[in-house]
Image (cartoon, rainbow, N blue to C red):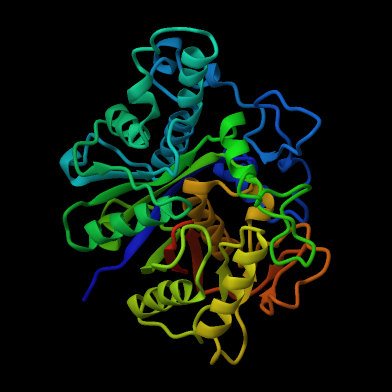
Length: 405
């Protein structure tokens, strides 16, 4: 019998709050309001809508020394902040734990985008002949993992996962597998992203998937996704290990499912999403009748929302009562590689509050998305099991199931 994996700590920084407690307050809000607005992170022009979900009132010098900042891209800063909050929340005492039995797995879709664009500006605009000597260690997608492991003296398996918008979902899955195999005792797991830069924004705009007003997943008038930034971290342990050290337990991680569409670089395939969801159900030894709420990938693009709705209806076709569905991206934006872990935190908070967070900004439900959508207002409900989806470009899919204790 596989021993249950439990969540004992959470940390988060996003447009919806600079701490997990602020995130908890805002995720059950009825509107995105000021979490989604025109960016202040780079100079804009009047010809493009620069709508983003950026971390508010963030001053790096309040968290790190000047010497530390020389080695920290913005995404790694967010990773360290969320990791420290999660570690404190879990009351981890590293003096009593074997550092070789602790793992760090932190995902990122892009990594040090700010560092990359700064280096390019120096070389191709400012006429410099070389970049800052710390450019490479700052831009690597694995930089956040390295910084977390160095700060806390973690000597067990440490690596980064990079699978576009499923990156932190794969990080959680990999950590769970290591815990199940008894390779480690504790996992510091999550993801970080900080890619609200001019270059990255224009690259996404080239795909014609960015919203022109706000994020309204599954709404008939949705206009696209809103790029967000930030980080989230979970502390995972086997249940006996957590209870032996007297840790509080938020929820169980009961099922993981992964799949690949093997179809198209940007166009999602319903069968791939169905496979990931069904794999998570099988892993948790559940059926479609058991899931109470689905935290959808729900990016707000025309194609993704329709495809995910189709997949949900297929997998849950035998459910006598359709599970509630919502997308919290309408509040915190699409955080790319950090999205899965932040939405996992939202799912765990839904269990804690026995409340479904709403999909904000919905004006009229799209008839092509016939799901049991929770829109604009939170809904109180009895919640035992939650399915959280992350479906990435390239058809890289992760579904996670969290269970109430």
